[in-house]
Length: 226
Image 1 (cartoon, one colour):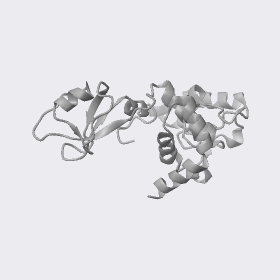
Image 2: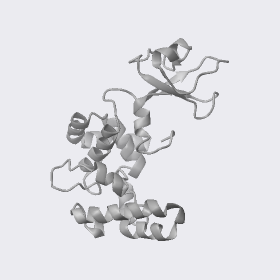
Image 3: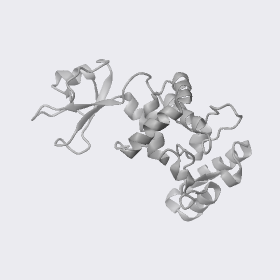
Image 4: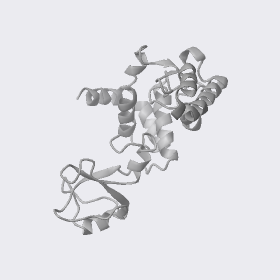
């Protein structure tokens, strides 16, 4: 409840920027606010000196000490050094998690290089101190990975009892033909769109038909429950 309340307050506070970001990238502001909440509690985690670490030191340590992730850490370390070279941020402010995730929206260095945006127009892509830059960077990642503007991530559904379902994607109309209905009783929108059935807690739990945008979100964090 607190996270939702804070999200609504942030939606009002940053409305002019969210208007611009939504218009430019076509990503729903509520998705961006949810990511911001999940990744850094609307930036609150960045104020915690016990959690935030020097990214170069963290990645150098991982590259040396963690044999399972050494290649990943070396790649991210070089990318972090290139971020410093670009002048977007100085070394004392290049902070992140123990694994090198940075800023309000927790981007690893290579993702920063690929998607970072200077939304506020000050000449620096600053996801640590600029909320507009951070949210626009998240929106840019989603857009470049195929986000479909104006469409949902999926639907909660009710499954008919005793029936088996195919794996993989079918059109929403095909799922409807198999007896799958929206939990709220409303019709599916965009019936020709493909969707995949997910039952994260088994058939006894809630069921969902996940569409394209759900899988785009997994490019941000590759976990169904994210």
